[in-house]
Image (cartoon, rainbow over all chains, first blue to last red; front, side, top):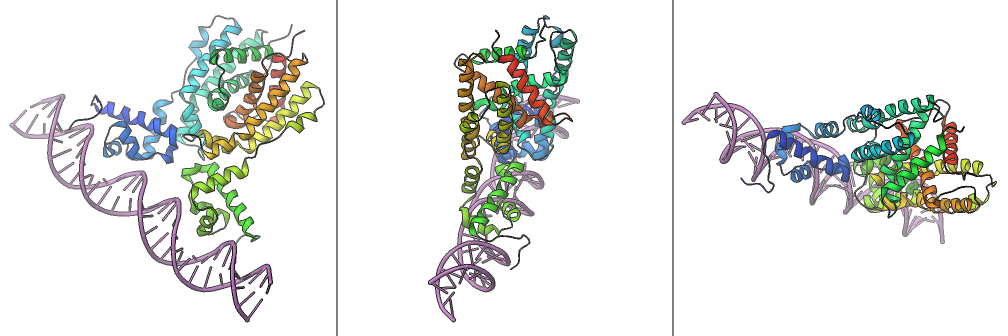
Length: 198
Length: 198
DNA sequence: AGCGCGTGCAAGTACGTACTTGCACAGATG
DNA sequence: CATCTGTGCAAGTACGTACTTGCACGCGCT
């Protein structure tokens, strides 16, 4: 047989194409709104193949969530920072936007689902680990007298700020200047708000 | 026949019970995950009755969205404020939390859907109108020299702050002190961040 | 009393979807 | 060459779900 796509035909590659198609469709229509037929078609694979790989739909969902949501380690990232709180936070914000954007659809899926699922667990893995790391960073800055407040609340505030933009604010699009000025604005307000007054 | 529930049996009441059941189930399982059978059962109504009222499922969804999402007018609310920016914003925040919580599930549903739907339009009606009003409020405060910055960005920042808490931050629950200190913290940081320095 | 409206009930239709199965084929590997 | 593995293909099963229909019943009218 011939195939439409220039497939590399290793089993592993088949698996990856199925996972990619799964993610794309799930993000659009949700888990219940997506059919295995559609997934197979988009992946350029026979539906039977899909079931041979994953057994059943739920396992496919789980595999998809696990595949695309690894915990992000940014401890190392935090150690490469210059030491200037302002530029540190700008960089953290940029990194945060990047990371959260990557799991945006997963997070929304998890929000729209009834109870804890594999998707929910996986989707929040990165944000939760980031939150912890960020709280440690804030704690250091508080200890050094640069910032004031509860580090946990500071980290949460900061993440929420970014979160609201990434997740929900398609309805409030960035201005024509693009996303960078908005990020700068956010970080500045945050910094002014929490910098220790002398 | 007898019925389990102490039903008031007017057609209008039947309609309302169906809408309530629809909303409850949709919030849990999404539109595709919810069956008309379940809705009818939860509403204490026969499935046929449901279809006699709404024709088909999509119309039911639309009716549900329209019924539960009216635009919130808080112009009048803003005029009752004391004039002290700090307490003003605290009150606005409280009101905002209230309003957004009421449409939280609708907003999440709209986020999880592919394109613009009736739910999407309805769910964002209140937040969008609030955003406009709030921007006007900020503009006044900027004009009076109390705050500084672009009123639109200020309003957006403020709403995003609340939005992140209401929508997504079940994963970052409020501390044991309850939600009020968190709100105060948020508003304080915001105010410190945007108050005009003299 | 008689009528109509809203509803319950039971059965049914049409269709979509998860998942299976048996067979054929092509490529890699021994 | 022989075999095994991964896949395509076509047909099929079982079931769930949106939506329909015909009938009976009860309540509130006039």
